[in-house]
Length: 327
Image 1 (cartoon, rainbow, N blue to C red):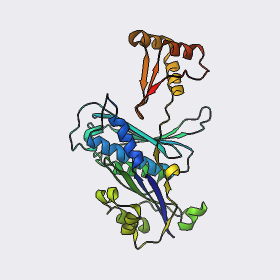
Image 2: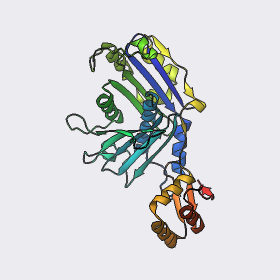
Image 3: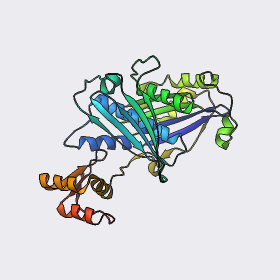
Image 4: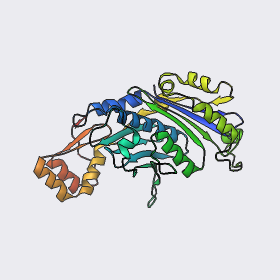
């Protein structure tokens, strides 16, 4: 079962989150493999998208925000776009667009940052957006301070967190065809008990120099990929932090934890066709006889015939016409 574990280091301005995605992640892969047009992801892209999914859940679980968190990577390589969306209730979905062939050992830069123009974007989209309100988006390049190509997603996201939140952050990420997992260790601007109490009393700026964070981050960085993928949470935390005083919180799993969930619907597709315009919709109908739209995230196919399209444009405020959907 997919799960999120949050914990604090008592008396220290350091917190942690450990995520293990099992059924939620394998459902993403199952739906992609069932797509007859594209087929399963090649292993390097599968692992990158898994790391992105674990990272997006880690970040969503670490913020107080009523809305979707969207993590995207895009660039000039064969992987044009990889995107993960995590809702505030931890419903998640993920997809990627591949044009070309990947080597079995393709690196991050070879997949998405060939010319060093790739970008990583994190968008926070409020659930109840007010009129005129725009989502918040932060964008960072896929290179370091010396313009060197970054080959680890964790390095890209750590750079983002330092720039956007001014907080030291360590990420350890790993994924395969069974598990997508991640560990986040973050320095907080307030001391231990104040973190829980919501105190607004901040310590002095200690970016890069807080000794407690540096010690704990060093311990966390010793976690190997194989350990993150194969060991249970209790074993990982005990091995890494057996000398530390941890305060652990109730795990988020089951209906409260991460799970595959797609927000696509026939009504949303109808709205998309409405925005497309009646002339374009009729043009597609004349060419193909029907309009078929497939969701890249869940694989669900929605079909609209001439009667369906007529109802959309003549009665735009009504519920979308019912029709059979194929997954």
